[in-house]
Length: 451
Image (cartoon, rainbow, N blue to C red; front, side):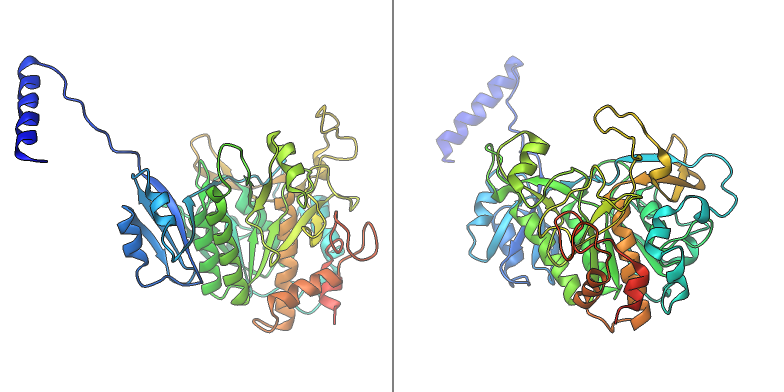
C-alpha cells in the first residue's frame, strides 16, 4: 500500500468512527483438517515446509506411513499442496461413523450364572460345542494379543478384565472406557472368559478406542491405531467398523476421498508387513460390494461408485451368517470381496426386514457390554444380544488368535493364517469359493487341526 492510499484508508476509518458507522470486518475462513499423502512410504525432508508454504499448519507427521495431517483456513490450500510434485494425493480429512449393528437387545433377568450353554449358539458353532477348547492352542494364550479397534472396552467387566493387556484411547480427552457397548461386545466374542465365553477365552485383548462417545472417527485416529498395534507387536487386529465412501458424486471430484482410501491401504499394508493378521467386517447393506454402482444406487439412490472402507485384499473380510449357517438378510457379499463367513446373528427365520415383524431375539449374538446410565456413566457390567457383520468379524479374529497360539507367536505370516482359515472353513453354498460365504463358514476345530 502506498502513502496516499494509506492516508485515504485512515481518513475513511476516522470518518466512519466519528459518524458512528460500522467498519466491515473481514473474517478468516474456518479451519479445516486435511490429509496429505506423500509419494512412497516416507516423508520427504521438506514435507513440513511444503505444508507451511501452502499456508497450512502441521498437526501430525507420520514418518513411517508418509503422511501429514494439517489444518488450514486458506480456501486455496488443497489447490496449492496438490501442485507439489512430492505429494501423491490430498483431501479434506473424512470422518467415519460406526455402522456395526442391525439390532441390539440387553439380556434381561438373572445373569449371575453361566450363559454360554444357554445363549451362545454362535460361539458353539465356531468352536463345535467347545471342542476347540480341548485342542492345543484352542483357548489361546495371553501373550497372543488381538487388538480391538473400536469404541473402547468395559475395562472392569468380570468376563474381560483378566484378558486385557492394554487399553488406549486415540480420542482426545476421552478415556479408553467403552460407554457405547460395541467394542466390549466385540472383545467378548474374541476372548470373554466368565459367564460368557469367546472363541479364545485365554487370548490377550488390547483395546484401542477410536470412536468417541458421540460422533465419528477421523481417518487419522483409525490409521494411528492400526500402526500402533503393529508397532506393539500385537498379533491380530479386529476392525468391526467401516463406512461407505461415495467416489463419484456429481457435485465433487473423486480426489475428495483418495487420500483417505490410500492412507488406509498404506496402514493396513504396514501392519501386514509387520506380521499382523487383520480382520474386517464386510458391512450391513445387503449389497454386492463388488459392484460399486449397485452399492451407490442402494445407499444413495445415485449413479456413481461407492467403496466400503477401510478395505484391502490384505484383510480377512467377513460376511455374517445365521443359526442355519446361511448369509443373513443384511450382510454384504461380493465376488472377490468376501473371504469367509462367521456367525453374526439375525432376528430369526420369521423376521420380515420390510415390515419389521416376526422378531426373535434368541437368534442374536450374546456378549459382554457395560451398563450405562442416561448420563453416560458406567454403573455396571452386563450382557446384550447384537447382530451385524461386526459380530461376525471377531469370531474370525478369535480363530486367527488360537491358530497363532497353537503354532507360536510370530511363527506364521498373516498370509499363512489367512490361508489356514480359508482352507479349514466349511463349504456352505458350493465347493470352493462363492460370493456369499467366500471360502465357507469359519471352523475353529478344523483350523486347529489343519496341517
